[in-house]
Length: 116
Image 1: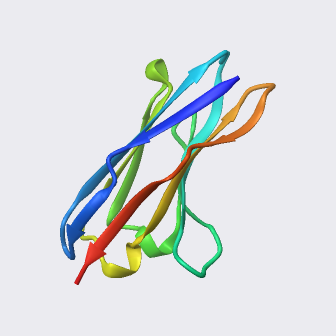
Image 2: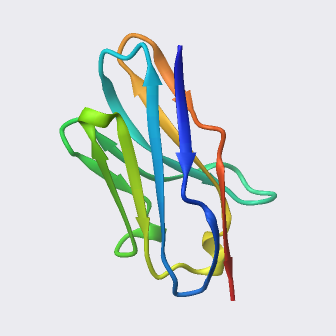
Image 3: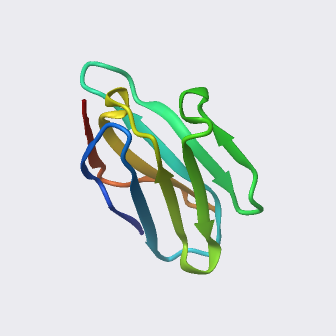
């Protein structure tokens, strides 16, 4: 069993910053990719950013230049540094991990609210 625990969400004014963290624990041999998706009210869940174990990054166009994803493989942890936040970034942010031989796991979600 694998658990993902997210932290770092909250309320921030437009132009501000937040840093999300997600730590994976359990019976893990290795994690192929980790990343973040988000879901705003009334919208589908969408990709924010992912990063592979060897550092290949995929960012959504909407966050390029503002959000930075990184990971600590030794700690099975992925981070999302969010700068220059906009009201349209308001959503529940979900962490995911693609665990070798076990499949894809999701965190419980953390709310990010950006006020104008």
